[in-house]
Image (tube, rainbow, N blue to C red; front, side):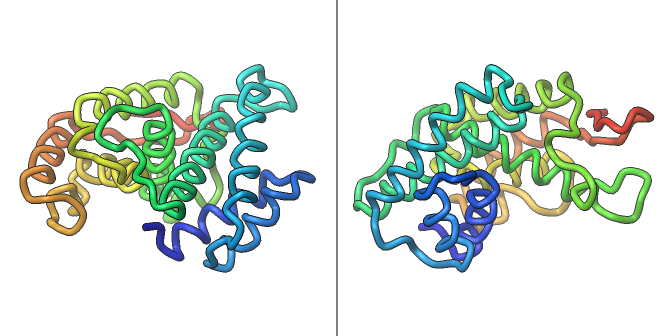
Length: 215
């Protein structure tokens, strides 16, 4: 189930996107306060409204680009899972899915920005966001996440966002990993941790042009 922290995080993102879409605004307002939304049909409408924006972002309308596609996909994925949980249905989680990839990738990118300081003492996410990552570097990060997810979807299950966080932390030896025994079984956690560490360390830095690159 989603925690209050999850709801608050998604509520903030939903409100950034509502732009006159009443259902998105309504759901986002409840989530921002850590509250469940009482009418599941409104949540479904919010999901549909956001899904309709994805083709526009892919066409780079309104100044949008890959970062917006990534965030919209993650929001739609979250709302789909939220609806499934509230309706008592179990979403498919043991096979590769585009929704799962979108949510895992967002978790991975957000963790990179939160954990890296660059040449400053503050985390990069204090000043930068996904839109500041150079296109080729964002593509490389996505390839790493997608390759890992395709190979290990069965072990990851439906903990997509957490898996993105753990992948960045585990591969960089940050002292937190899949095998800490809290979120995955011992066997699955060990397999995921070993695979993440086999990828080797990776870091991000700010270039002279103000764009973020992967080292």
